[in-house]
Length: 180
View 1: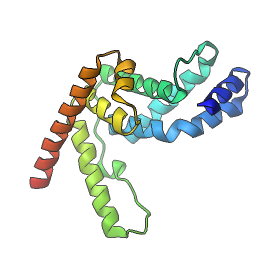
View 2 (view 1 turned 60 degrees about the vertical axis):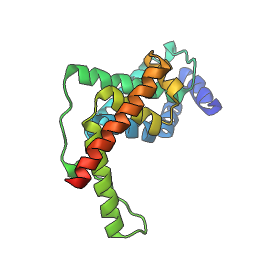
View 3 (view 1 turned 120 degrees about the vertical axis):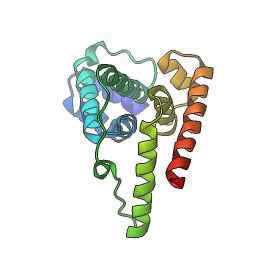
View 4 (view 1 turned 180 degrees about the horizontal axis):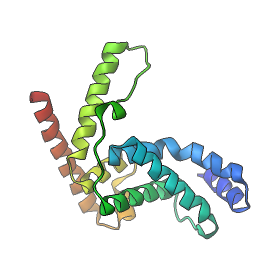
């Protein structure tokens, strides 16, 4: 947190390297969240870049009340919502979202992990956006339910219900995939 505050001060003074450091520090987490919400790597990268362009151009007006990480997560989620309002995202080929694993587990385990990841990614796209968003923010962004409620401006109980119902729907979908 202190490092982010230091980088923001440097960025406000015109240090372009500070923006690069902020980007490198947060891009992986933000991209993971965007991909999880959109199920489209290319669109997620566009969202990430749009967020950082807006962040950089608006840095003079920025007044953080919390962490930079949570601010950027909120920007990503809002950008994704805007995209959903404009049009439904297109689905992508399974090959585009498959995760490669270069670990020592070997190709069989890597294939199993990729298959499971693909099934989960598919299942996530089948649940309502608000539930998907809550699950992704809680699991991928490590945000608490209280933080999600504050970010979305909704009651804590609503966030908890969306999470619970979303997980129930995911289980139902995943059970159907495994059985089918």
